[in-house]
Length: 120
Image (cartoon, rainbow, N blue to C red):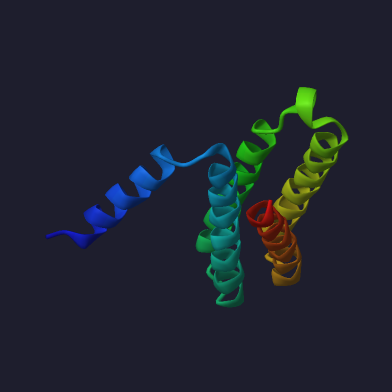
């Protein structure tokens, strides 16, 4: 039995059956995971791995931006949009410099946002 395939099926089912709130939490977790990978890769001078992980994190943050409901979210949605835009800009800069501190700063912020979503 291919356990990777079983794991992928489990993940697919988790996503397909998730509530909107859970999907947001899963997006945060995906971005955090990629930022942790980027931090480790940058520390080991694995430039391509670092870049790939940072790009994946940026893509996930862009997906978080796409989920914002400006009509009903008002000021909170606007603030999150600005924050996500800042994160993406900082990650682009971190990708150029491979600065692990910048990556860590964004990861910690995303962890705090994820924890807030979990509490809601």
